[in-house]
Image (cartoon, rainbow, N blue to C red; front, side, top):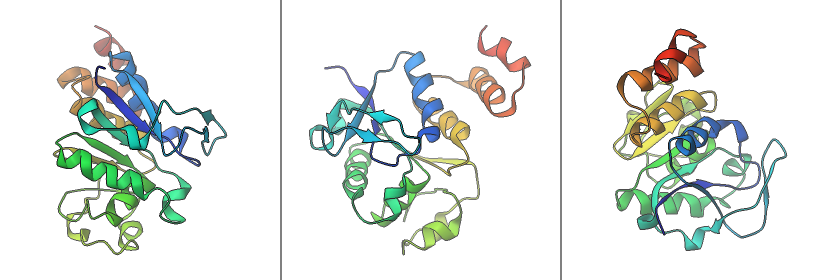
Length: 196
């Protein structure tokens, strides 16, 4: 089996946060597979029903290029998604990138994964409420990459995707800049550069 990008899916996942990243990874030749706690379908915050491709217990870092963790209400209502944060630890320990946005950053904070890595989220107070020890590594930025970890807040799906696409080598240099200018800034001049 060839390696895939794995998108975590769970009830209340925030649909809008990972769409740019997964769409353009797929458009540049990556396989995107969904992974959930069980084989049962999940329903996003927008009411989209997703049938998982595999279960979390079957996911191994060596079979993956990247683990993407979207935000979800469930990150803040208990520890039901903690297994995804533990899986993120295994991925990072194995040198496989992890990209977390919105509520998933709080899950990583609770797991201790942001204590010694530069990171961002919705606001610093949100992560402070987790009791984590990484407040001095918080960066006020739309998205942050520190080695194999990418983080972003809920209002930055395009910046999040930019960091993911860069880390995965989907776009580089002028093309990456043009992609961001097109989708973030609605710069029509970027279209020609991106498609040249």
